[in-house]
Each structure stands twice: as C-alpha cells, then as structure tokens.
Image (cartoon, helix red, strand yellow):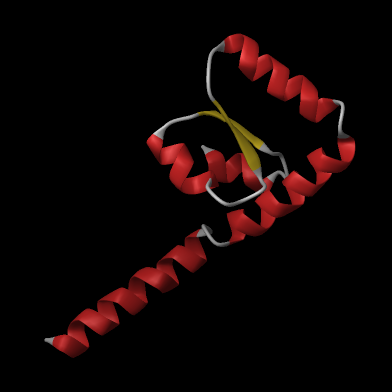
Length: 88
C-alpha cells in the first residue's frame, strides 16, 4: 500500500496505471514506470545513485502521506456528511 511506503519516507516506484497516476501525478514522491522489469530496475538504481533526490522524494512522500492519514480522511468524510445534511 502506497501510504505505508510514503509514511516511511520512501519514494514509490509504481507501474504506470490509472490508480497510481492519480496518486503520484504532479507530485515528486515517486516514479511511474512505463515498461517492464528492466525499466523498473533502471529507475530503482537511478534513485539509489542519487541520494539527494531519494531523500527529497521521501520527504515529499511523507507530506503526501499525512494528507491520507485516517484522521485527515475521517475529517474530510465528516465534512462531506455535514454538507450533505445541511442541503437536506
């Protein structure tokens, strides 16, 4: 699960697919890999050889993970319920 990876300040390496695109689009906390195992390995080794980028992406991922915490998601859901009830 991405959230667990992000909470560990670890960049996400994911195969390019719709759900991953939505999560990672416009954020610098992971890489979407287009292709197969060779491209995936190349991306992983590239990050391992760039510790500054690896650290920066991990930090950005930790910030993103906070926006998906159970508490934050619960508060967002509660606000939606409250707005819906006010309209009723």
